[in-house]
Amino acid sequence: MMDLLEACRMVAQVDVVVAILASAIYGLVVGSLPGLSATMATALLVPVTFWLSPIAAIATIITASAMAIFSGDIPGCLLRIPGTPASAAYTDEAYAMTRKGQAEMALGAGLWFSAIGGVVGTLSLVLMAPLLAEMALSFSTYEYFWLAFLGLMCATLVARSSPIKAIASMLLGLLVSCIGMENPAGTPRFTFGLTDLLGGIEPIPALVGVFAVSEVMRAMVTAEPPPLPRRKFGSILANQWMLTKKYQWPMWRGNIIGIIIGVLPGAGADMAAWVSYAMSKKFSKEPELFGTGHPEGLVEAGASNNASLASGWVPSLLFGIPGDTITAIAIGVLYMKGLNPGPTLFTERASSMYALYLIFIIANIIMIPLGIIMIRIASTVLRAPRAAVMPVILLLCAVGAFATGSNLFSVLLVGVFGILGFVMERNGYPVAALVLGIVMGTMVEQNFVTSLIKSDGDILPFFERPVSGVLAALTFGALLWPLGVWIWNRTRGRRLAAG
Image 1 (cartoon, rainbow, N blue to C red):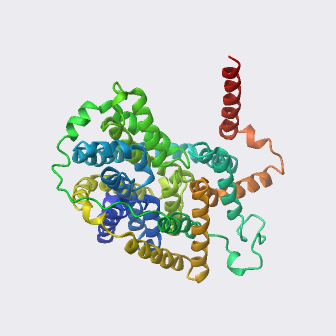
Image 2 (cartoon, one colour):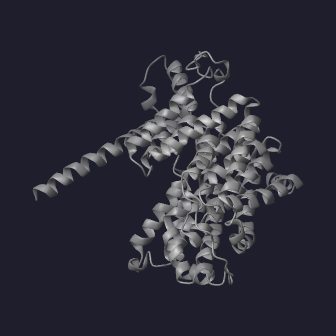
Image 3 (tube, rainbow, N blue to C red):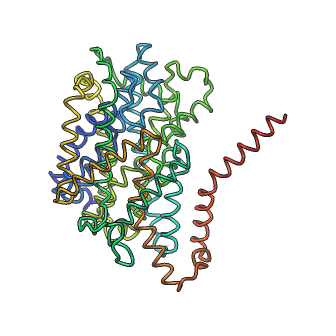
């Protein structure tokens, strides 16, 4: 009880309240601009967190990401251009509703069910994390190695592109994580004689580069989206209670799917939205109405993407393994502020954990009034010319990179990773897998080497411990899954050809 009261006091601090409100407005604006993702919005906030208290810093990340995921629905609904990747799953459905004159219902559904999904996802975080923390206290380097390795494999398993390309991206990320002296041997690797590389590649410049700078480059080679016609919106929440009662099972199914996918390392809100929309269509009593402006898919996918945001913090807080690209950034901020992820965080810093839960709930509650205001002024924000927005983003990237390393080399790194992210996206290589490799490479290597030192080079202890053996089996299953699918498709194709 004392921890909860202390958490309330921490969240009620003036700097935390201001951080929540400012990042909420920022997240809503950035998320509503076509092409600017929630991850990019979060990455650009990192330099700001240097000057904030630990709770205020985490509050900016949580609030901005939740708001950006919702506001990505606005341009998708009105322009058929998803604001964030998580909105892409149901953009056509929302736009079809707008063409039918139901823009208010579509936008209201996105707002209402995103808020519900966020609250349910937070409750799952509150319930799951402490229980898993008890178990995680018995983990050794063997379990942590397999857990980190499983996270890398899951990222390739859930990638929407070719699994081979996802694995290639992940391996490139692991290669980047090898640069510098911060390895178990303390030996300079891949530094090419440059003293700037001795400290390795920090994840933050890499994240800002592949998500923000590459987006600016992409904007330079794509056409400007069409201007939004001026229109007055009616009541945004008028029909939402009716939709809640009518589609309560899809809503709960979306919440559950979002929570499960959020816990999987490397999956994220966009994967949750795609899976939930597909499930909604599969189990619907009216599947023929999907694509014609039917709200059922919006209800399930909208609840799912925000539920996955909160549950994605479970592996991040417990093991330092990012649930998605947003929590990959959050892990960097947690370490920077002395809140090192791990099971002891729940015992030694319990009040900070309660504060984090409260921020999640507050962010999803204030999403409703602020979201309604954002929808009403959407026409103004969406009219901002791309030529004015992109240079500001590029400037923020440069300033943020300089603040991270206090040298020009960090700015150069952001540019290099921006070019790399742009080339990878153009050729179908997922940058999320690259980021996961960079963030988790050190964890995989250090736990592997430490385990070998403990066992005197013997590999059997990696499989002998019960939890370690289960995690090893899951990892090999994830690694061999794409091969199994390929063999199954080949044999099935031959059977069909023979028949």
